[in-house]
Length: 288
Image 1: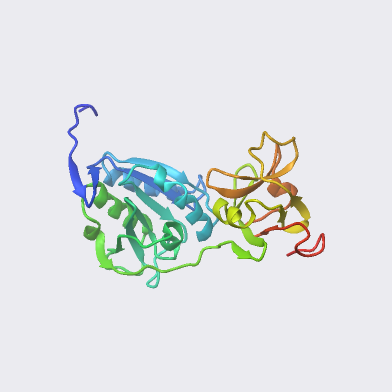
Image 2: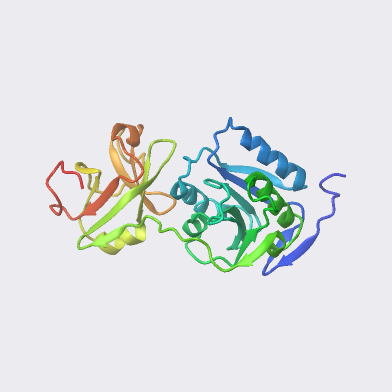
C-alpha cells in the first residue's frame, strides 16, 4: 500500500492531534557513530514503531555530560512537530534513584533517565511524569529495550500512563546561569560548536538589562582577551578578528572570524566570560 493510499488515523491528546503510526522519534546519545548501540536502538525502534520516522538529533555527546545534552535538546526539540518523541541516551543506565521516565511537556514526549536532564532542558514543570515499566528483572535492565517499548506505545496511539506509573516529581539539577553584579555580568562557556565558537550562558536580555546604553568590555578567561563591542556577524569583522555576537539562540557567542576560538584561546566549557564597564575588574592578565 502506498503512503498516499495508507489510511491515517487521528486521536486527540489533550489539545494536540497526533497521527497514529507516523511519529517523529529523535535520538540524542553519548554514543559515537561507530558504537553498535546505535544499531541496537534503531533496530528495536524500527521493528516496534511501525511508520515512525527515526532521526539522529545528536550523537557523540560527551559521556555523562548532562549540561551539554540538555543544551542540545532544549534548543532543538521545538523545531520538530508536536507529538514528537525524544529519546535521550546520556547517563541513562537504570538506577533505583534515577529510574527511566517518560515526560510529557510542551506538546512533546521525552524518554530518558531521571538524572536531572528533564529539569535542565525544560526550564519548567512537565505536564506528566511516568516511571517506565522496566519488567521484573531489576538486575539486568536494557535502556534500549525500555525506551523503544515506551516509544512504541506512544507511536501506536497509547497514553503516557500506558507506559508505566504516574509520579509527581523529577530530580532537579541546577543549570549554569549568568549572574549580575554592580556594572558587570559573570557568565561561562556552556557549549563549543563544530567551528570552535564558544557559546555563553549570557542572554541578550541580561546583557541589555545592564549594558544597553553603556560602554563595556567582554573578557574571556582573563583580561588578556578583551572585546569592546557586539558584532552583527562574523563577516562584519576582519579575518582572524576576535569577536562577540548574539547568535540565533540570543546568547553571547565568542568566535574568531575564519578560525577556531576554542583552539587558539584554549577555551573549554566552564571557562569564565565577564562583561564589565571599562576599568572595572582585576588587573590585566589576571584570571577571574
